Image (cartoon, rainbow, N blue to C red; front, side, top):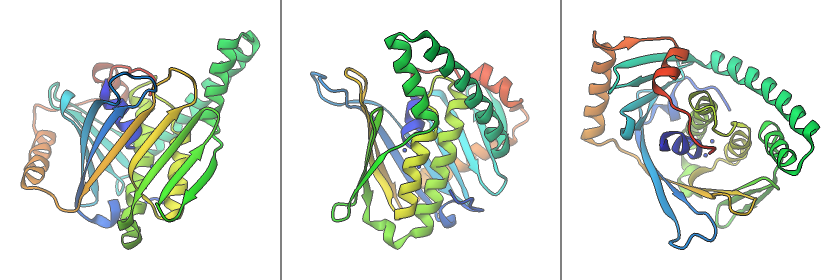
Length: 278
C-alpha cells in the first residue's frame, strides 16, 4: 500500500531526457513519508520509507515491504520492474507510459463531463479535483534566502525545502528531477487510484528551472479533513557496501532462470494491487 504513496511524494515529489542519471554520479536517497493531517492528536505519523540507489546511469527504487525493485533505465528509455517474492519481472518503455497516460487522460475527461452533468456538490468537487490534476495551475512564490519554493492552488499546495548543494551540482539536479518525473508518470499505471502526475510535473518544472534539489516536500490538500503528506529526502553522496551487494544480488535475480518475464499488463494484474488516493 505505502509503495504507491511513497513514490508519489518522491517522486518520488520531480524534463530533459538524460542518457545517464544525475550525471552518472553514485548516490543514495532515503525517503520517509509522514501523514501531516490537521487535527491529528498525535502529530505527524510515519507512513513508510523507501531507498533509491543511483548507480552506473540507472536508479534502483526499492520497496522492502513487498520485495519489489523498479529500475529506471534512461539510456534504454524504459523501466524494468521485478518482484523477488513472486519471481516476476517486466519492462515498460517511456513511449508506452506516454500512450497509456494519454488514454487515461481521455477517459478522465469523459468522466469529468459525466460528473458536471450530475451537478450535485460532491460530483462537482470531484470534477474540480480531476480537472486540476489534468491541467494544474499554481501561484508560485520563492524565498531566495531560505531556498523554499511554495506552489499554491485551491486544490493542492506544495512547499519545497531545497538543498544548497544544488548550486554546485546542476547535472545531478537535472538528472534527479527527470527520474522523479518518470516515476510520477509510472505510478498511476501501477496504482490506478493514485493521483495523476500533472501537479508534480508542474512543481518539478519549477524546481528544475531554479536548479533546486528537494529535501523536504509538503503536499497540502485544501479540503478540510483531507490528509497532508510530507516527504523527507536524505541524500548520501556515497554508496554503502550493502548498496553495492544489493545491486549485484538484484542483477543475479534478473538473470536467474527462475525469474519469469511477463507483459506489463500481466505484471500489474498479478503484483500491483490498487491503493488509496495519494
